[in-house]
Amino acid sequence: MGEKAATKEVISSLINALQDRVLYVRQAAWEALRAMGEKAATNEVISTLISALRNDYSHFRESGYKALQAIWEKAATNQVISGLINALRNEKQFVRESACKALKAIGEKEPTNEVISTLINALLDEEWSVRQCACVALEAIGEKAATNEVISTLISALRDEEWSVRQSGCTALGAMGEKAVTNEVICSVVNALRDENSHVRHAACRTLGEMGEKAATNEVISTLINVLRDEEWSVRQSGCATLGAMGEKAATNDVISALINALRDQDLNVRHTACQALGAMGEKAATNEVISSLINILRDEQRPAREYACAALVAMGEKAATNELISDLINTLRAEA
Image 1 (cartoon, helix red, strand yellow):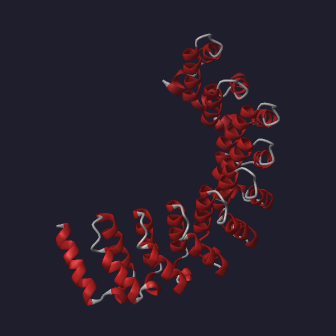
Image 2: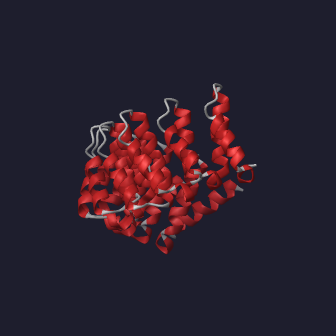
Image 3: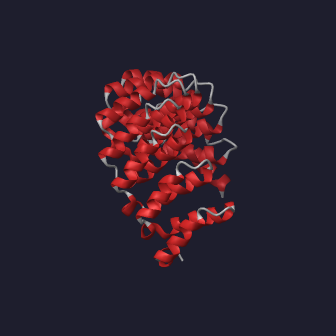
C-alpha cells in the first residue's frame, strides 16, 4: 500500500511493532515504514530511525539508514543531521559505519556543508571500516563534495594502512571531477599504481582513466606502460583501458608497442581492452605492426576478440584499409554468416 497507508494510526502501530519480540515482525515494520517514504517522516519516526543505527543487529541498522534514504526530502532536517553526527561519536564501530551510510543516502540528494564536513571527520576515524564508509559516501556525492579540504583528506587516505581505504580513496577522487585533476592528486594516484595490493592498483588505473587526457603526463603514461606488465590481469586490463581513455595524447611509440604486446596477453579480457585502446587512439595508432596484429586477431577462435579487432580497425579509418585487411574482413563476415 505504501504511502496510501501512512496514517497516524498505522505509523503508530508500526513504531510499536518495532519493539516486538519476534524478529520477523520487527523486520516487516521497518520495511513498511521505508515503503511509506516521506509521508512517514514524523519526528517520532525519525527519532526511531536514528536510534536504529545504534542497534546491535545489522539488519536493523541497514533498515534504519535505508528508511532515512527513502524519506530524505523531509528527513534531511537538523534533527537527522544532528543525530547522525552524534552517532559518529558513538563508541561502537558499527554505529559509526551506519551513520556514514545514512549520511551517504542523504548527501547524494542534499550535500550540505555540514554533511560533507561530518564525512571529512569520519575519514579520520580510528577504525578503517568507518574511514572506508566515509570514502564511499564522498564518492557517491561526487563533484558536489569536491572541496579543497575533501580532496586533501582523500589524498591522505591513499596512504592509509588499510588497502580497502586506499582503494576507496582512489575511487572517491575519481568521482570528484575536474576539481580533483591537480598535479598533487595525479602524483598521489600514480604512486597508488605501485601499491602492493592489486585492488588499489586497479582503482588507481580507473581513477586516472576518468581524468582522461588531463592526466596524460609523461610520468603517468610511463607508469601505465609498466602497469601492462602487472601480475594481475584485472590491473593489466585497467591499464589498457586508461591508456585508451587518454586517446591520441597517449599514442606514443612506447605505448603502442606495449599495447601490441597486450594483444597477445593470455587473458581474453586484456586482449579485448587492448583492441579498444588502440581503436580509441585512431589513426595515430594505425602503424603497419598494429594493423598486422589486429588482422591476426580476425582469425582468433574467440568471436568477441574478432569483433573488437574489427571495431579497432574501423576506428583507424583509411590508414588501416589495406588489401590484406579487406580480404580478412570478407573472410570473417563469411565465417560469421
